[in-house]
Image 1 (cartoon, one colour):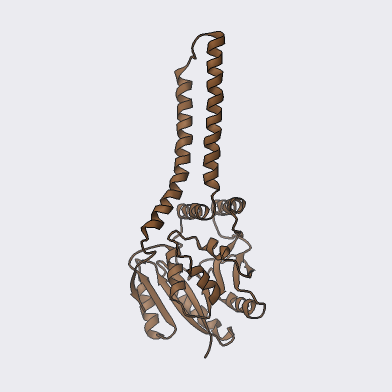
Image 2 (cartoon, one colour):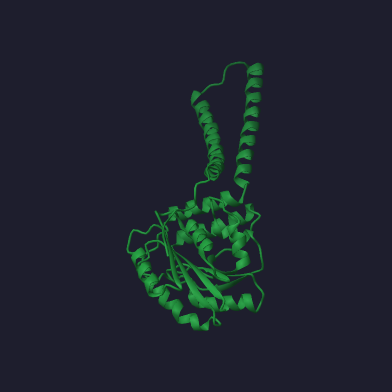
Length: 310
């Protein structure tokens, strides 16, 4: 019985790229050492013709092409989790459908696992050509920041695109948390890992659904999920504010006793009150993000809802 490589491919409004992706992977299949390839496309609540295209692909190749369609948009993290739960292959690859993850990399990935003994072979971009400058700047800043405050290693430029053994996939599936950050989970589970470098690839068609604000929120989620540093920052800021307030109070009382008179200037007093209030709200905001994540976890709502599956 031939071994199987399963491809997990999240899709959100990707009607233009799906046929191109499928054709490209089919072209490199003969190079995959005789492995069979099964596709698991995850339709993440697309509003275009994505689902109909997946239905047609499945009808033309029921043995190898499968799809899971959500009842609405649950996000890429939910799509990745659904895909990993659905696949049956001996090796599992996570890929983007827009061909920014070059399918031809599957060949050296497979060699890295079978010939070199790695459990995970991932990919890393060596440049950010074609990406907006401000996005590149904040992306690099994110990696520098999270690596300083987290015990989990995050390598700059690493993509979700990777080939994993079944053991690695099973380990990831054991973590059924609601708030997911796959880049961190892939790194957190450990295992012997290798990264293949390649230059940045442009989308083959269509437009990305990621916005700057969406990436920013995704980065915050990663920091919250893999670091307690923001809580320490809130504690340090609160402690520092308290110490400064006590010193100021002692100074005011001593000046009153020694020199008499009252402290002039209600405007400066209001400014101080606003400053302290702002610090308190800032700290509450940090605490609120962690409490919010706890709230979502304890409700135990499903990570996604499947409307159709083939």
